[in-house]
Image (cartoon, rainbow, N blue to C red):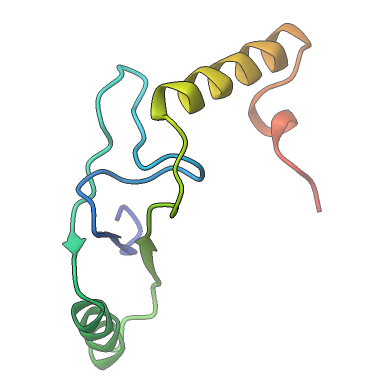
Amino acid sequence: ETHGVGVAAYGCDEFPAFFASHTTDARGEPCRAPLRFDAVDDVAAWFAAQEALGLESGCILAVPPPAPLDGAEVDAMVKASLDAAAAGGGGGGAGAPSR
């Protein structure tokens, strides 16, 4: 949203993670989706409005995985990975894949 990119979730109030149906922030609070759609026609209208307005930014539609893992389990795996990266001197840009 900071750069004018529309962000919405389909069929959920919380922003889903890659393998879980929700995410939490650093405080453990749910990451709420700013906009929710429950019908594909509404999603299509959102995309069409973006185009009709001539907006050149994109839209992000987050869809929860069909067979989500437990969110707490995913959070624990992410934390363990970040801790291991930090202990090995990684993290930040060093932890991101390169082209």
